[in-house]
Image (cartoon, rainbow, N blue to C red; front, side):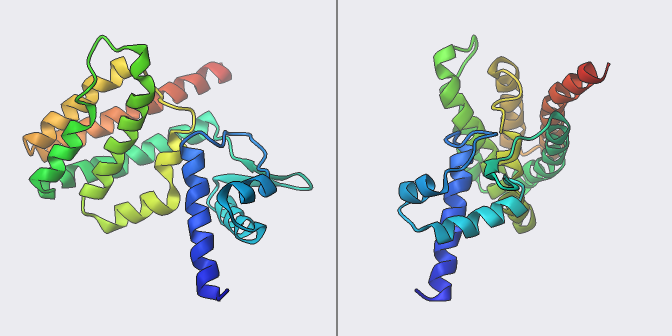
Length: 216
């Protein structure tokens, strides 16, 4: 197999493992069974090793001496920082969506939460988690800003910040999502940006309050 083919395979394995982390198939603190992972993905351990080395550098996994690789568990302090980053980057992305996205893109974003309502039903939770991920991913993509997209792709802050699931219950975040959507549909760029900052900083505050309780 050529070096190019090896690189492509490693890239595919790398993205698949990230997706398994994002989907909750691999959990924080789990030890990675490289042989089992290779069998699941239908590859040899060579691309698994190369992908894990990359993921270690990107802080998705950690290598412990004489123990192997583990899915990295992010601290509350790190999650605070991740949501602050999201507030900054995604608020600009949302503003750019309002300014530049096509009407069909805005409609796609706006449709993410159509099937949900309040009072929220427990059986909707898993679907809401998926809708939340799609909503925020679409904002980044539809912003049209290649730098923001590349930061999201390479740093994986969306995946990392969602490690513990939703920071706040849908009863809180659904109305906020709908406010952001209303601003996008109205092409009110400043309002969309402001609402997105507040949305993420409120989630940041959940982890910030946990830290304050631990340190008090």
